[in-house]
Structures are given as C-alpha cells and as structure tokens.
Length: 474
Image: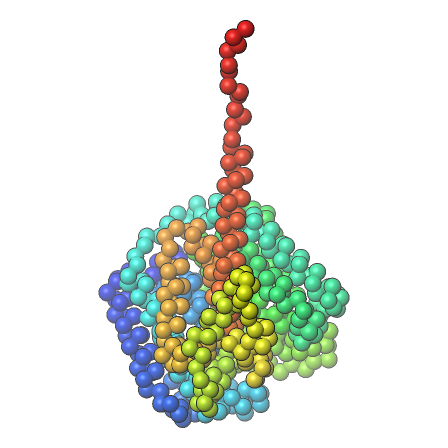
C-alpha cells in the first residue's frame, strides 16, 4: 500500500463523517454542566474507548503516516493514555504516584477527559471537512522522489542538523562540563536556564533540519545527518529530553512517508514496543541521570509509558478547576500575547510585561500556580473560550493539518512539514506562545535557502559575455 492511498476518496462520505464528529463534539460541550459532571474513574473506560474509535477512524481515512494521523496518535497518547490504562484496569489507581492520584482521581478529571474527547472529535471533523472539500491528485512518482529527493535543500538541512547538535553540545559542555551529559534533568535545566532562548532555537533548528535532510537527495550527507540525530538522541533521552527528540523524529517519519519511504507494520510495531519500554525508563533515569544508574532500583511496568504521557490531561483538569473556582476566561489573551510581545520588540513606543510575569502565557501561569507540568492545546483553548472554544480551535487545527496532507506538490508538502508541522506537533505538550515565532522562523529560513539557491544558480549559469564589437573609425 502506498502512502495516502487511504485518503478520503468520497467527498460525501467525508462530509458525513465530519458532520457526525462535529455534532458529537458540540453535543458533549452542551451536555457539560457548569459545576462538572461529577463522574469518577468508572467513566474513564468509555471515554477512552470513544477516543480510540475517533483515532482509528481518522487513521483509516487519512492514513497512519499522514500529518493528521500522526498528530492524532500523539494527541491521544498525551491526553487519553492515562485514563485508558486506568479505565480498563491495566493500571490500578493505587499503583499511580501520589502526584497523579491528587488530580486524576479528583472531581474534575472526568470533565477534563470529556473536554479532550470533544476536542478530539472536533479535530477529526475539521480534517474531514478538508478531505471532503479539497481533492488534489498527489504526485505518485515515488521511485524518482527516493532518488532525487522532494526538494533541493537536503544538504542545507543536513548542515543545520550538524550545526544545532554542535551548538547544543557546546552549551551543555560550557555550562556544566562533560558531566552535564550524564546528569539529571533538573541539573540540566538549572545549568541551561539562562540560555533557554538559544536552546529552544536549537531544538527548532534540529527538527526543521532533520525533516529537510530525510526528504532531500540520497547521499552521504543525508545518512550522516540521520546518524548524528540518532547519536544525539542516545545522549539527550537519558537526560529527560523526550519531546525534543520525539517530536522531530515523528515529523521526520511523516515527511519521509510523504516522499514514499513508509515504515512497514513490523518496524512500526517494534518501534512502538520500544517506546513503551523506553519512556518509563527515561522517567526513572531523568531524576538522577546516567551517573546514578548503578544505584537505581527501577520498577517498570508495561503500561507506565501511557501513565507518563497521559499527564497532559493534568493541565486540562487544572484550567477546568480554576474556572469552576471563579477564574475568568482569557478570551483570546494567550493567543494574542505572542503577537503583542513580538510587536513590542519591533515597534517603538510599545511596552510589554516581562515574560516571567505575563500570566497570559499559559506555561508561565501553570508553572507559577502548579509547577512544570507542561501544557496542552485543549487546556489553552478552554482557558480562553471555554469548552466551545476547544471545539473551534481543535477543529481549525485539524483542518490546517489536513491541508498539509492534501498539498499536491511533494516539495511544498515537505517544506510545510519542516516549517509548520514541527512547531504544531510540539504544541501538543506546550503552550501556544512560541508557535507563531517558530513557524515564522522556519518559513524565513526556507525562503532564505530559496533566495540563496536562486542567486547562486543565476551567477553560476551566467555566460561570459564577449564585449560588444565596435568598429574603429580610425
């Protein structure tokens, strides 16, 4: 089966599916009472089952390796993983940590799961509307794409991978010495806290670069970039940098599938099984680092990975709890904050609050009130516009990712994955504040590559003109 053969072929079927998902999402929103539904752990199983059905139907219509299908799978793991294993009894509530029990067994956890389910349905509805409305024939010359690459920027992408990895190694070595590569996650964050802007740029560049590299021309540069990425993953993952490695890797797999390199089901299942073992190991190791591994007694269970990733439901539970306790909605404040802050840096006369004091930034608010628990697009939409806002925002997000899948030109699709998809995928676990800037930087980088290539090709292809012959009058 070639990639994207399962994209919706029938506009009427996609439209009907979109309508069912959209109506179901709004029905859940309307059924949520202001004080909460009051359901407990016993309701987790059917919420997880419904979310799995939505994910499965979307994967069948869009393709498991599409931008939409991969995002939906990541979204499910981070928002429904915990309630799924708890709801069907694979993990007992008593086996969870006290931290997880404090919120997952509370009165607002089921509300958070229902709101996330509405967001999942809205995401599927938005994607299906695009499939029904926009039909584009994609280029299926996969053999040619594998040889020549989807675009001419593969070498630049490989160089970007090498530069960002080198810069990361230099920062870690300069701030904490060689021991910083084997320390704990807390020590790493403390050592690099003053260079957080540089580090965020490093991971953004690494994600963009690896996508450009894997979709470029075959050769030793591409192979070296992939090997370098795998090498830095072996160092970064024990440090606790899961998202920094996982999200670029998923984007690279999606982009590679768009160009014809599709993982077989055996390799995919082996990869998933490896992740189920690796994620809880990283959780244990990140507290002490590799240097404390000999003295560590790890007790790992098969489904600990879902408990670990499913913690993104915690921010959703918190914003629902805060609103029930009287907090007002931000009404778009967190989405406007990055634009306002960027304008204040460019336009004279505009002054903005310091980032660490701006409570419109969701990760700042959550860190101030709860701690570093990450964030979620569902939580941010709810904080701004309530449950109805979750349906609208997630529906638009699904439509946007489906537009990437429906791009007919493979080059444009690969560049869109490198510049737009990587930040959006990272947003599954973070706040929206960095997404506009990261998308803009990625687009500017690609435009710069295009301009440089155009100028260089113009100079190199310019013929040496002979001087105009002028007949002498002497």
